[in-house]
Image (tube, rainbow, N blue to C red; front, top):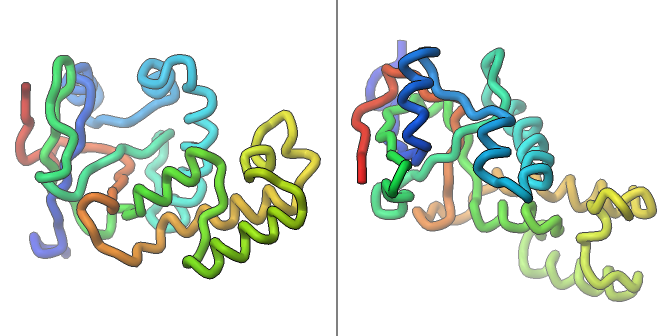
Length: 193
């Protein structure tokens, strides 16, 4: 049996409608329709990247049946997203074994379809290699309209994305956490605007 030292505090900002979901379903989960509502015109783009994240993350922490997408969390009160109109913050107590930590700055590389270098030397070598091959950037390797021209490059870029889970600097401004769902017993407090 795990004890309280096996738990950490996380903060997650969610739409106020999530309270109804918690009341009616006994759990908060992020669905395809949540993401469509949140991201509107770019939802398809984001959902494809979230699907990649789900596939990678469930190799580390088993995804419960019925869960579609992860719930983004802050690891510190100082750097959490604050409650705003129609948005509340859940202060959660979560077992360490249920948390998927990742580097938020590296996630930006994923969002922009870029290669994530191992280090500065790798970044320089990759840039030189791309220049020698005549590529301006890695976006076309992942873009649905052009990716079929570059299967090896696409694989190389997407394989590098797993580096988001390699955290060299434990920094509250870089490190983020994901969990699969919010259950009532996890909620310590709810912060309102």
